[in-house]
Image 1: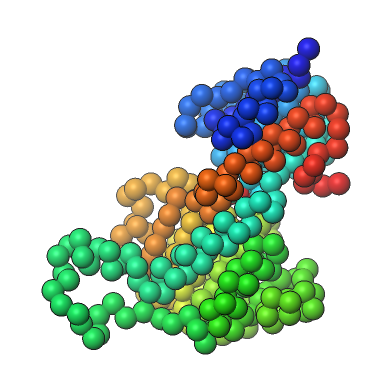
Image 2: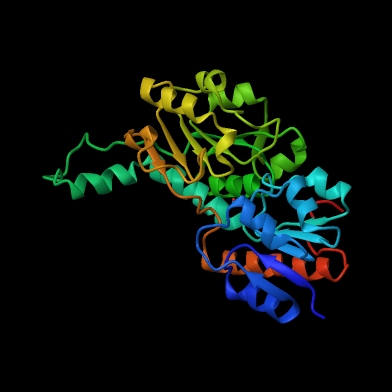
Length: 321
Ligand code: GLV
């Protein structure tokens, strides 16, 4: 008999076809994720679960699933939605999809950085609202990247990929990353420093830390106040790394000049959220990994983790080893 699994979203065929071939798969058919209670019911009796960052996977869900649940395979690199300790206590393996989305996410961070620095969205609006009457020497002036200082908070895989891009743009790079060595930072032309100095000296600050108890609201009223009034904040990691209320106030009061966000708190961000009314904010809907090739690779990796796990094998990409 094939192992039974629940797949909480329709993922790209590259992964889904593998899952269907190797497992008896119950696949959630809607774009909207299953409600928590529904997820709990559908996981009951299954050997494996393939989930996404929208699904809350806690101890109660694991217990409701039953002792046969062997693996939780997350189609994302971040897994702050999963109670990892509860899984470990129950002997459930967890897999994620690191590496394959590094470049796509770094590309998006850079796209947001450029868009905010050079006021791309405002420029598009300017035309659409009929304001483009002539070439004006002093309109829509933005900031330069070359010669400017980029502060990278979290110099892991994605942070380093952002640093490599920044080197190509002739930027000076500061990084704050407690677990990184100065030698590893130097390989991507970054100088390690304290968070305070990074915020104080950077023209652009980009966040690449995972969300956990240490990083929740790392960017808050106090840390925003350390930034330059001309600085731009880019966030492509998880919304709650930034205290969004404090960011809103800082953007309104001119404490910093702008923000470009791929992630928000909450997600999805309601269309009437006041932050969307601010002229100095660009927000896109959590699309860091959203390139065709990257999503195919993530789906494949998630399927491979799931299939290995339900067959009692070590995962190709475990969250812990
Ligand atoms: C996306 O946000 C991911 O963690 O993969």
